[in-house]
Image (cartoon, rainbow, N blue to C red; front, side, top):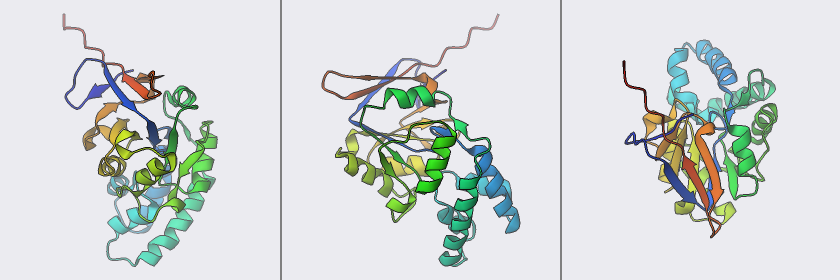
Length: 236
């Protein structure tokens, strides 16, 4: 597959880090089918445009999405409905699959410092990682671990602290605007994954996880090499 930087360079790009922080939905697990089913129903039940709602939902905890879409509504109602939404999403794994390249990527980083940093709660994260047949990282920062949802950087900062790595030495993998904003606010470089990511200013962008090579340097640093985007053949 392909990779590109914000300046659309066709050269190979290499980044080094001491730890990797991974978002889940849209980054290593493709759960769009479930997310769209559940949030489309929620939006319609509240008289909202589902397409507009889906522009907000990715990357945030459910209560935070509801607060954006229904800003006048009391937060306790959002929290109660978020609990219902989490239960529904956890029970629905139809169509949950790994993002292209995710199985090989997770195998490559298995022995390296990394953490899952997701807006899902522990039950939902377990359900989706299991459905996608991906190994669950030992270090997990889930919704229960933080007091603020992405785009707040708390989750990524907590992931770095748990791994004992300075934020500047971490690389975040994210697909959403909220997540990319959170990673950059944490002082980290961000590899944007998938079609949603490119518009939100990641450090570099890849269409999926097939375009990455993971190696380690002599000092133990993790080296991520992004293969360049093939150049189109000239018109005949």
